[in-house]
Length: 223
Image 1 (cartoon, one colour):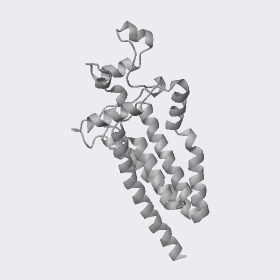
Image 2 (image 1 turned 180 degrees about the vertical axis):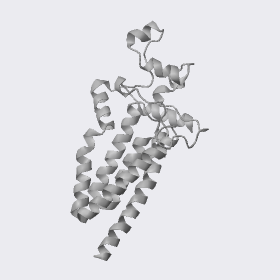
Image 3 (image 1 turned 60 degrees about the horizontal axis):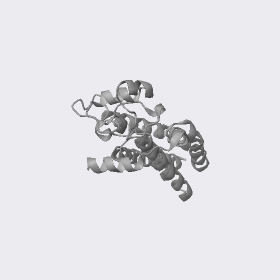
Image 4 (image 1 turned 120 degrees about the vertical axis):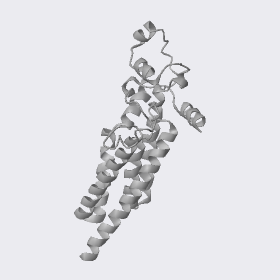
């Protein structure tokens, strides 16, 4: 399974040049998606009013925060990072020496990734990497479980089940897929890192939608 995961990653990761690098870095960031978040809140407000929007915000924040914290358990970071001290985290693809055919430690590859071409040549490495990673994307250590996948899927599923419009469900699904792919392009996650993150996010998004429905239906009944 791991070999298949690595092969799929290598098939999807490629060097698209400076333009694609910038596009994928932007897609993987937060700023670009602010209009989508505003659209979600506006649609919830139109459907459920201010009370509904406040409940949505509270539950959305809880789902996203939990998604990030649970993903951090498997990478030994964040508030819950110490819960599985004996668990061996999986390194990001950009720091996986076997993909480059190198017999060095992941930490050593992490250092090499940060060197300039001149410094690499001086250290005896060509710098012709198998895994394409834009310089700006070199960060972190571990890739599984993907917090990006967990948080965007939690938000997307919660929003889709709340707003219940076909065009909107298609939109947030497309956005989630694009964000997940950007993580592969940037060399940050193997496909299975994203799958596990998406499954975690789906559970939390589903739970948030159930809680939202019960809370808002209770308000309507009381009124």
